[in-house]
Image (cartoon, rainbow, N blue to C red; front, side):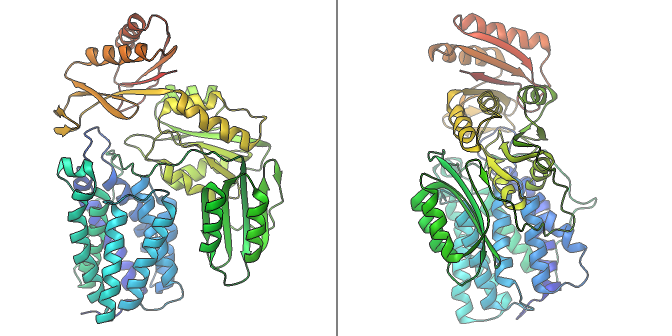
Length: 541
């Protein structure tokens, strides 16, 4: 039984875990209980951890601190989807605990696993039980108890795996949707797969990646327990302070949480970076002064010159010099949708959406190309929001994520964008605009399912209204008609239909006619979106 691991060992553990998640990603994707073709938990976790594996393969005999740091940095930038972001945060916490260490025994590993759990929970506004967070938390707690009994790394790691199995099995009882479907949580299963692959590597049975390497597949998941709260406070307050004492940043986090919302606090040994929406920025700054000196401060249209901002990665992308105060980037798939956003004034398009979740790095690169001081990001998909929220810590630009969950929400938000307004005014206007539009979608069932009282068969057409399953049929026409009738009943006045890449213009005109016939008091517009996966994206205002 292995007592300690060093940098070379840790490198092997992560590469083995990445290979195992890649091998099992489709099984993880299929755990998604909602049958639309977006079962991507496995894909997102695979692409995230394989970003770390790729960087670790470039290191020749790294020490433990170097290996864990490289893994954490790569996973943060490569994080895709909510599941990938949480996985990257688990690694970030582990890396923090291992910083400066040359070897890791059982006690240190238990502490590192717990540090990872703490980092992940801090980033999630509303942690839900029955998810990867639950599995990781209970596994870490069992590891700490095991470390009190035996200080061997392998003993502690095996104890964590045993508890993770129990915790994973119980997720089906903690989440009503999982219980009804009779499946366990996909993210929690992914974490167990990673832990088990690490144990194999410890025992000299390294998991090997598939022939041909990691493939960028097109399965997507609806890992959506983590919603961003609407912004309700007036002042967007951001600052960086250099750490000059040992005061616990968690005390500052608690204070700021009571003062406002939309709080993001990122800290390391050198700085604390804060973003918070509050009605009293003066109190926030006064409290922060106890922790060190201000490096940067921004409130409303006041922006102090950056005195220190270092991009730590050697391959840091070029950052466009600001020539204007505000810019916007949007995520979408389809040339028609891209044209719509560009016509509305969006500066950069990030290709992605359902079945194509962009990584944090993908979003960062587009943000950095925008010649603006403040860049708004419209994710237009609930599974991209968390990845977008990681960008602000990686660039000197002020990045504000508007939590748009659909393309119609993003389009409506852009109609409220004022390039001459302040960041705060636009944040409020764009966020409020999200609730003024209803989104309808028509796609297909990727597999058989019994969901929310609907017997669904693979290949069925699925209609969704505001993210909820509205109806299923082998014929698309009755679904379109039912959506139109619901739209008319709600008194909507403006309807825009974006038809996808698998729909002809002739078919789309028939769908528009159905809406026009059933919504006589509404102005119906038809546009070619060119989007994959969804035959129709429909907005109603």
